Length: 536
Image (cartoon, rainbow, N blue to C red; front, side, top):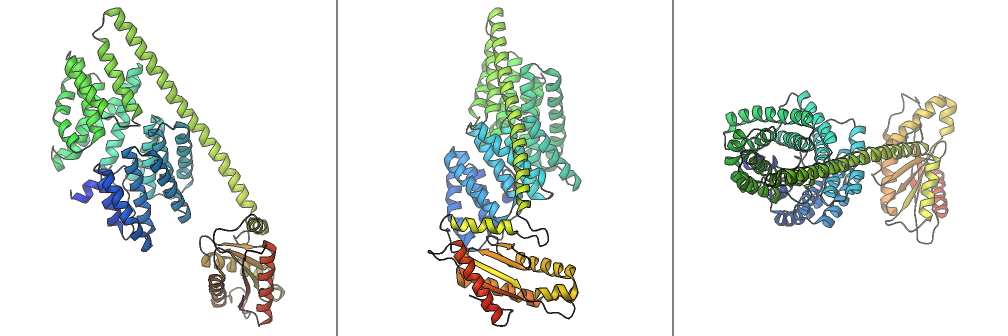
């Protein structure tokens, strides 16, 4: 495996859609993934202006994402949340639904890491809704779904994380591909953590089912990895650690130690903390069961030391095993009392986990209701004939112009279809409707993301622009030329279709009505000048 592939394979969720300057982004992720977070931040700061200058928005997004992961590694939560909000705005401006879903999931995981549970649940619910609503099924979908699963697992929402991982696995299988190494590790980590928590609660049947599945999957994947890449490959070390923990949770003592002992040091040397945690924990549980409390305690303390901030579930698992180990040195009555206390505490924490699960479901329902309301609101602002905004949307935008000075130059185009009554009278109202539909499509195609075209009357359109008058006239001229160049013979044979446009810029002393009247006056000037032209 070459250096770049090995580094990418360790990312929290592998980014698969690169921009032309992807090498800049890969470098940042390599540094962050190697635990060199300060260097990653420096590299991101140096690379982002270059990516922006080249207009490589994809690389810009990945650089911001790399910055978030670096901040989280360092425990700089305020900076991570600020970068997360920046990335959300970046994806929303680009209309990147899957990028938005992934970023919401990253923010959710950051909140869980910072013990901001309610906020994290809200982010997770929004991410879930976007993932369910999108029909896209591509590498970006898998990446976003992976981040969603990771965030759910971080909060101990095993049911949610497991369902998302199964969706990932089904999608990969449907493409005829094998489950990748990182997905293997995440799935095993989920199964063993879930199984260990259930085991500590005394839910033996459920625990055994998950731990046996983890052990069997790890065995098959480990055999294949050793055959293809050798016993010392990074993936083989990770798989051995997770199989060891699954077997230790099932009560075995010999094989867990035999598997875990040789992999702990290489895993720690490579800063692979989660599988190293699994190896230490496996040894600690197995050694304790073998009657070697001192050695078991050393391994369990090492596992606890590896628990990063936010590893609440993993820390709980280790703490339970440490307490259970300490109880073995007590007299029978004291031991029973302590074990009862440990079990009560585990049950309380499990109830808190179930409360988080209920919070997520409630938050998801609220998001669904808000989304339904937003869709209804959008429909009320939508012109069904052209797909543009309607008169209500026009009035809304006009009112917004009067609420305060815009942050950028604002201009208005008023567009009228030349001789439209003749089109209706000569070719029928159905033909007139088709002309309006096609002009609506031209407006959508020639407006920028920040521009808003609307149909505010029968054959009259308006375009609200974030632009000065010079740029507004250029945009208007492009629209006029596009309409003039469009062949309408299939709709209105023998009739040439054209538009006239009036343009005006909002000045400090002007109201929205003043702006409209200025643009409308220029429209009539364009018509008096012979139509099929722009006047400003």
